[in-house]
Image (tube, rainbow, N blue to C red; front, side, top):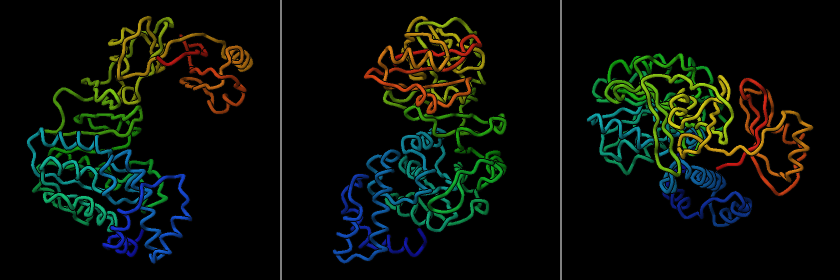
Length: 395
């Protein structure tokens, strides 16, 4: 999307047309929709713009729920946007710290700024890209306490703000077909700039969950967040928005609600032991935060093998921090044996999980020639240092 397309999209005709469209469905006949809109007298560029937005709104429901139906997006902006449920937790930190004026530096389409404004905090959303800034302004229009500034965040005077929030761009420039940036030195703004600001006042910084942990400052509270078992971000918190005594945290959000495992530092791994009746797969946020040992002690569990993020126990304890499986069989890790044993059990649907073993689950599944109506989960891993195949069922 360029500025010309945006101007057309922001016209009253375009917005009314967009709001009148039925919810986008991937199974709909797109050509028929285009033809109907063209016959109604709408220009090709207008039709393309509104249909693109309709598709993005449908995708955005996973992050913004019903609010997505009244927002505008770019493909890249939606990709990096914070889920509204998580953004509300970010905003809550600033409110709990008694801060009233927040600068959202690198605001993108305005997701975090919306959550901050919703708590009656004054927020200034700063975005360098002109098109993205205009979309943020549209999304923030319902909030009188929100301002959008089209500017380079490194040139903004932050002295008048109580708190800062940064979401450095981790994708290449553009509004669609962008690629992920893997080198933190290429983030915009750079981590050095972000950490420099964090030394001046209460600050939150959103990063990708897989960032090199050696880059995390010693004085930061590092919180990995997962939503429905997907690790979505690493939040670094400094000053008054960081919690005393907490340096590592795993925040797990799902159907159970919100649960958190936290500690002053990485936890020591639990001892390894014999395979029990149950196997636990820790949530990715727990693994990233290196709190597997603390979780094991909560569950009275032990490690399957040194350095492997699977736990085992003799009794089942329900927990939001791990998925639980009942081990039904221990099989030799041999393709011919596995194929024979799975066929004997009539297993035609197999979930394959692996840790500590060099195997391609998709390739292994093809080689196993699965047939039957039964389903199971296969763990290919190390038990007491030896390669093993564990057949299990989800609890």
